[in-house]
Length: 195
Image (cartoon, rainbow, N blue to C red; front, top):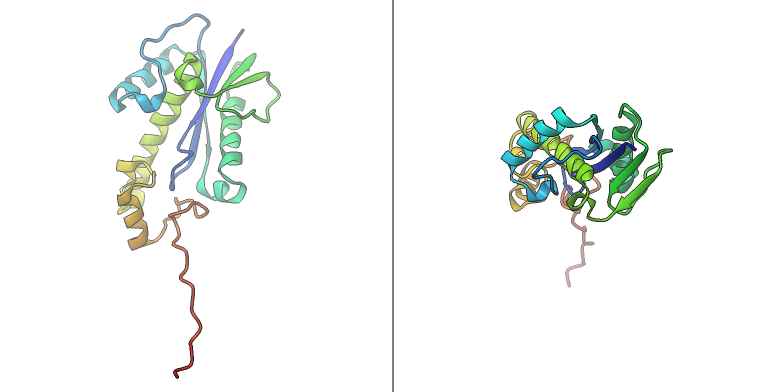
């Protein structure tokens, strides 16, 4: 039976796409060090990503960009990105293991596992592939949209990022429906008569 792990990176960011990955590992394969990508150093993630690429049966990516996130909301955009990653897998997996508590709109048997990126090797592999790709992409977007610090914070709502948004306003890579991206307009108070 071919199992595909599915996970995403960047769901809680203020800028950049949400990136999903799907990975089919050969049955019985053990890749030492696989874990939740957020708990692995950047250097180890890059090393593991290379090993996953070399040893997996197949891996793929799916993205949802900020305009789509703003149009359909982050949950639906995440599910779309995950579905895109799954649809690009060859061969088609027999079953999906998905990090989280949601099912995907694809016609493949699936199981959602909260915290699956910490306990299922194929989900851990997907987590690492999504995060390494997204981190590299955010460094490229930092060169295209300088001044926000995207290469450093990868789009998360850090103090530096929020300060840059206040100074410069949002870029085309910002999620306009996310709190902190666009300042709430100040309420205009009516003029009161002088007494």
